[in-house]
Image (tube, rainbow, N blue to C red; front, side, top):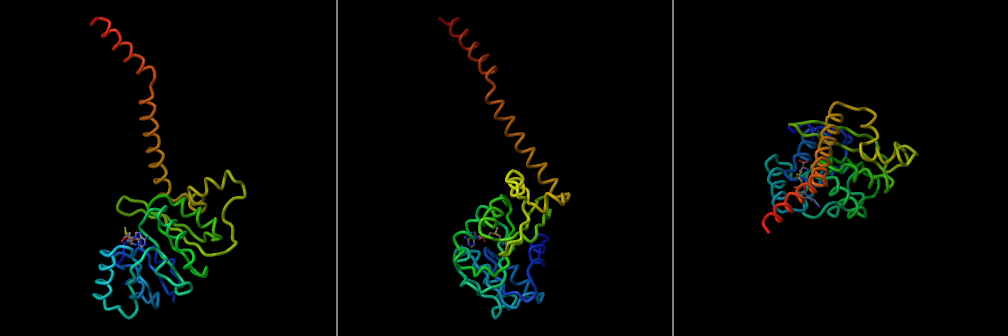
Length: 229
Ligand code: SAM
């Protein structure tokens, strides 16, 4: 079975989809989806040999070699356009997910549903989707083992969830337009922690820049030097 985070990711895969799971590691997502009868066929993409071998091992173990193909390669480049109807990319930073989408966009037909789970920097994923004509269909936030994860679901389309106002949109890209409206407990917890982190950094900076303190030290040292003369 899958953890809560990946179960939430899977919940957005349409019934009967052909799935590509990019950065699949042990291919847990494709195996689970086939076993549940959710998807018919799947591709597990991996850029690293170790995880790719783990995927192959798992697929063989559960005897799903007929339905799941493991491919070695970076991001979406393992796909031919139109080959799949849903793509999951989970468990990496949002910056990496955005890079994978950008570098592999020629390998998408535009018909696929994208289900993306950035561990951090979801803002980068939202920006990429917005700039490339993807409508954000849904957002979710889950807490598991003390960590908080966001899940973004998108398809090509005009539907506009963001505000017209550029200032508001800036915040929506950061917080997630749906998430900031829903204000789920995990969302509030996440941003309280983010705020505290920034507050701490600011205090450290202010401490480092305390010119009065620095002036006092300079004066003390100067006096000491003068006494030594
Ligand atoms: N998707 C699984 C999950 O959510 O539990 C595994 C996440 S694991 C932390 C990230 C995986 O992404 C690693 O196995 C890594 O090799 C793979 N990866 C990183 N960059 C990649 C890329 N450009 N293309 C394909 N896989 C990549």
